[in-house]
Length: 73
Image 1 (tube, rainbow, N blue to C red):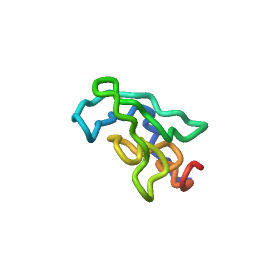
Image 2 (image 1 turned 45 degrees about the vertical axis):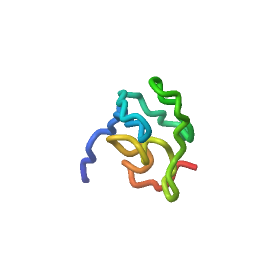
Image 3 (image 1 turned 90 degrees about the vertical axis):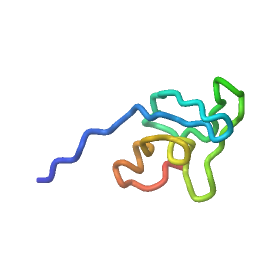
């Protein structure tokens, strides 16, 4: 029996437009496709090949990727 590391549910999102960072709690039951920067109001969308904004702009990948279940959509 292998023990897996516990899921990390807080990821620091970094806005590519203004560089602002903010810790956010990631949903475990759905992908978050959009995120509005609280400083500059830029609407972030996943980069090509990523499933959500956390995988594109976060310090931690989303829970399904962490669990190696693949993309969450």
